[in-house]
Image 1 (cartoon, rainbow, N blue to C red):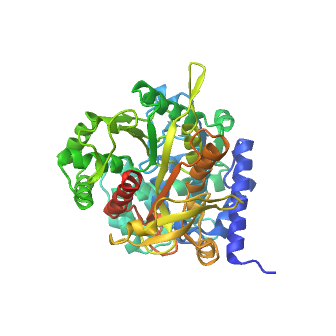
Image 2 (image 1 turned 135 degrees about the vertical axis):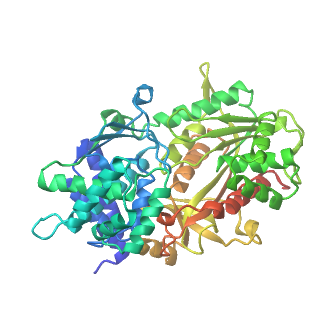
Length: 557
């Protein structure tokens, strides 16, 4: 029987992950060697939406390239060798860390040839970066083909680009329109598309210019093709040893519990919320500090703070919060997940949000632990450690966790950016792991606010950069009734269920609240993650979900 396109795509994803795990265990590989070709071939079969025209033999994928470069360290396109490392002490060296704009991690340029990239978020992060690098190597071969004729003769376009890049590096003026004309031929794109892309890369806070990126990608491909100077990706022994052992998650959770202990909060009722840190802070303390009376007023202030991050309102809220139970816990563990503690016993007003009162202050006053977004499997590592009992003086002190609330960004299969998804179950793609659960949040909680709201199962995917229309359409139109895809839901739920049902480290009837807002629609052209960030469109869904979580937890029963 002939396989469907969705089945072929699922097979390609499986081959990608099996190959990546094998290469990780082996310790190193050459991206355009035999092992690397397996990754390339699988990626081409899969043809992920985020990488657009990656399968086109001539056209470079420009939106996908910008998306990748904003998540990789600046200058990585110049490096022949990329080494993925654990946190191994380089933060104490004289090397200046390079931190990508869209994926916070420390990276170190040892010399012109070598880039070290610190990986502390688990396997999902490693798979993600290997996929991005594979994409870059595919595109570099297109540049090589477009820069030479069938006999291998270098074109004028390449020679002229090289001259412009040398001028740019020396700080000299050059004609950008002329440079864009030559560049357009090397990228297989129109002049108009090239000029537009050049401007987008110039606005990026993380990336070198498009001229420099294309030149250096092509240069490494030329050196590999004509001089035998192979590119190589390797993994440090320490990274291979630590992966999967919750090294960073344990440090992160321990710091939170120690802080709770230091402030005498360990035995108080605890509500854990994974969300944007600013949305919980502003939603709770905005009304108390500024006298806001309604959700609409909270949203208006949030919009103002988002437009002008240094507005006096944001500072007023933070200053007030710090004096009334707010404790910030910056991350030092390497997880890149910030955390906060909110002690409601220190509130000036006995309200959590306008009109929703708390009980009498005292030993039963709830404590809210807020954590920033996790990444893929990291969600299990951190949540699993956080839900364990606190070990002190030879004794285990369990946390009285009343609820666990997860707000996340996700790709939506119906509707568009900014719309909402309320999950009824998490289906872990490529495995037999399915997690149905009782969600305290309902579709009806969010109706009437001008946003699309969809309820159904959510697909927890192995990586957002690997999804294509065929697989997603199957999940949407089959009996799975999927409304969206994300990377953390099943991992969170695995930790919650094991802690509450198996380990009994938290109460078995812990409340679970999940809601997602759409960062993209991978089924619509021009609406994938590569099309850009949500920006102001993300303020309303973020704050609405935060408000409804607090309303559901503390409102009238």
